[in-house]
Image 1 (tube, rainbow, N blue to C red):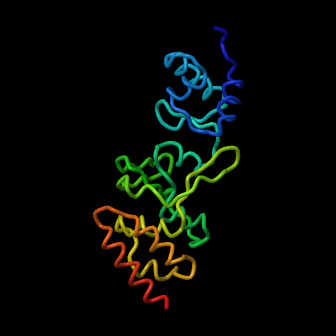
Image 2: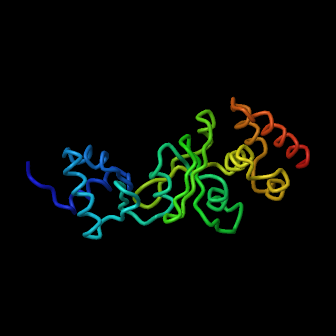
Length: 197
């Protein structure tokens, strides 16, 4: 089997729309074994065509939001990072904040933090194109709901930004939740709805 050039591997990878690849994903893409793909992965980094994120994971782009979305799957950008992207807040958070159904983890070197939520809460986000790739981004309303669930946002914090969110949309999202803590989320939204009249 003919060896692939590093440039052709990079181009093949980017044509898929993905930017972050594990050894297994590179193996699937190239049709080569995991052992060969591990060598390709190292060579791509050495050649400067990709950036090593973690052991066995590389990115072909430098966009932190794209990396955060694709590094841990399933996940989406939420909390302050989503609110910043939607223009609800102006302050750039220290970490790119994401939520996932996997265990919470912080990658200090990458500036990314993942918060664990139940699978039933994996909604209220959209896939959006970003550069040559994509991200998964929470709606502003869902970012606030994730924050209520994770005890990150108080009712007072959300009330300060009521003009930038649709309380009716928060109701719709919350009504579909069947998780422990859903009643608390609904109570906060009810209270916000009353204060917005």
